[in-house]
Length: 451
Image (tube, rainbow, N blue to C red; front, side, top):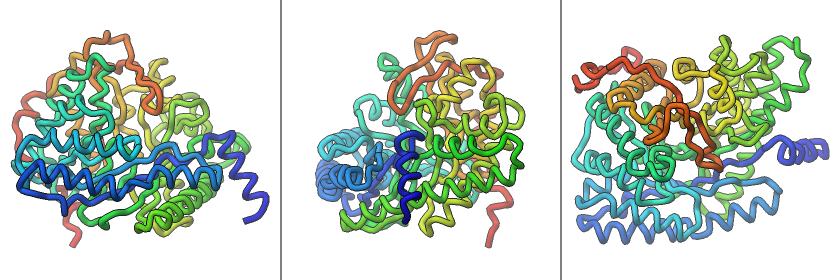
């Protein structure tokens, strides 16, 4: 390192909103399974608090040592449906155990109140899914996810139909608190096992017993770098600048993750190089696209600029670390991105354009507030559309919709903090009910035949 590198990094942190978005400790709970749910919960609590007792302190120590903000310290665990399969009983007990453990070790969120049902549902899966609304209403730190499809398996439409009801019920049970329950639930296609970002993180069965994964941020840094280019710079020059900037951001994530893993005496897993925005001014993926040349995100050309950004971020990241994983690319959460919020408020960004954008971004339809009277069938159909994009394109896609129960169609939900705020976004209300209620499974596409 030389002095210019140090000064450049300091400027990124102080003026361009560069941070480590999360250090996430993945913890396997497979060895906590027990036929007695109370004993299983006791084992879960002990393992989480033992494994993560120094996680927050380690993150704070690294912040002080390098001056790098680490916004969140989080935990992901084995999908709880697997423990429910062994123990039976009320899954809410696991949710409350996870919440207590998270509070006692001081982390921001704990993910893994999850089920993987892309090819079918067991009794444990079904029990957990049906408990999600109550679990998220009764806890503060627990996040939930359900994987309903994959390129190899197709789309489980029985699960899709069920999740439309679950999403809506999450909002109904928390309508007195900005429908916050739905903000903590993600419905996936092609979910990954090492995702450090919430609300969709869980600890996959192929992962180590305990592992550290890191999620970086940095939309503001990318935008600042592009602002220094001439306005007529060719797009290949723009892409190269994004790659160079992503390289620097990923190096920082690699440093933090490696040091955290060594301090905690656990393996280092991956750096997720996703550009994760916040509602803060200057920390927006939408503003990067506008710096590239759009008057406002949502204009024609939005998908093309996002595709270039996502690809360049990945290319820069993999040059900086051999441990790039998770989702890695660019997030487009509507309520968490100042530029997206503005575009929706001005009527320039709608659900159709966002759906098109998900074909080339890291995840999918994220943190979108929809009318409170949206039916469960419409929500299910949106989930199915998004899953189809992921299935056909062999990529992760997800849906995190928040029905604004009790809020007018001209109103908004405001959670503050990283969740931000969002106006109610109108939807096409043409009924997809017959399609949704057919059930069954959309077969895997020909792309699934890789062997």
